[in-house]
Amino acid sequence: MLPCNARGFTLLEVLVALSIASVSVAVVLMSLADSAKNVQLNRHYQYGLSLAQSQLEEVVSRQPLMPGNQSGVSGSYRWKSQVSVLSEDDITTRFRLYRIRVEVSWNNRADYPVSLQTMRLGAVYVE
Image (cartoon, rainbow, N blue to C red; front, side, top):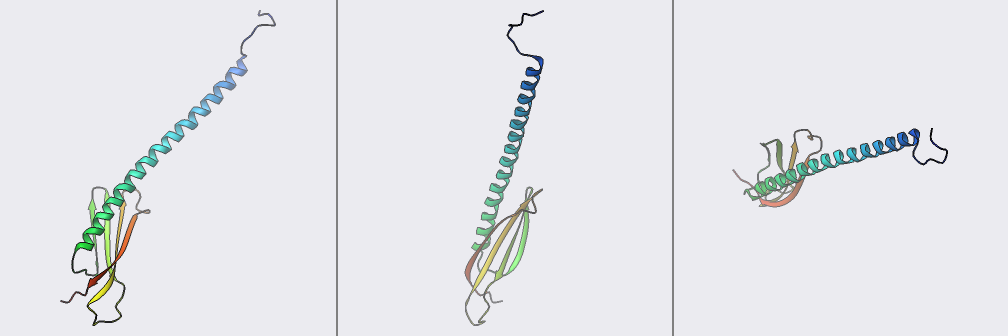
């Protein structure tokens, strides 16, 4: 039997310390897992934004601008572009204001696409 002035930890104190440590480790691991998901999501957004910019530049560079839709696939990313006329007030004018919109989505995030749009003044296309 130990003398009454013996120093040390009781079993209860050790169990409490272990439970606090295990909860702390679990919280840290969950934070790391969330960080990894956010890094991957950010990577998708960055690539989606880059793809949207390049598609927007491609559409804008085509002359003359013609209203219509296009779509395509680049790996697991899907894009669609739309060119529409914003002003058709006077048919005799030689220029019109066009809105160009490009949207990029990917595999499991089709509900949160990356979307870019711009307006350009372009010549009226006459067939």
